[in-house]
Image 1 (cartoon, rainbow, N blue to C red):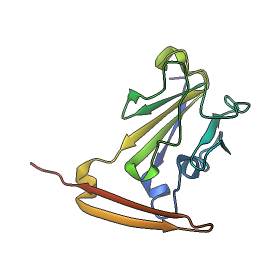
Image 2 (cartoon, helix red, strand yellow):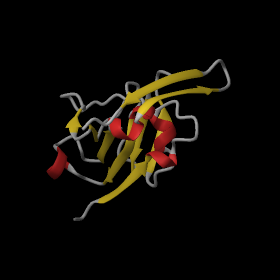
Image 3 (cartoon, rainbow, N blue to C red):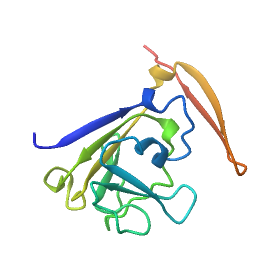
Length: 145
């Protein structure tokens, strides 16, 4: 209660090029994304919480299937996140430090990986674009039992 949370489902970004997590989060209300130092390094801001930071992500806690991947100093990196590996992204807006720790003053992002049963075999794809952009990805999974 008291938290504004939305979920970006895979169906919203599955059939379009998704080079980085910034491409996926751009359509989420209240989330702004700005280019960082590297090609896949993005600063993510929820309702202005990280708007002045020049690199990486601060004031947001990043989770991968509920496990925190934010570094002990509160810094999170977006260049290690591959959007093709996830089934959904939960965006929690506003101050969440009571729930997620002292670095969640701007909110939290939870990246949920794809279960093997939803892949059900082998999936291969290629994204291409300007300036020599080429992204190959491969996912394999199977539900057993």
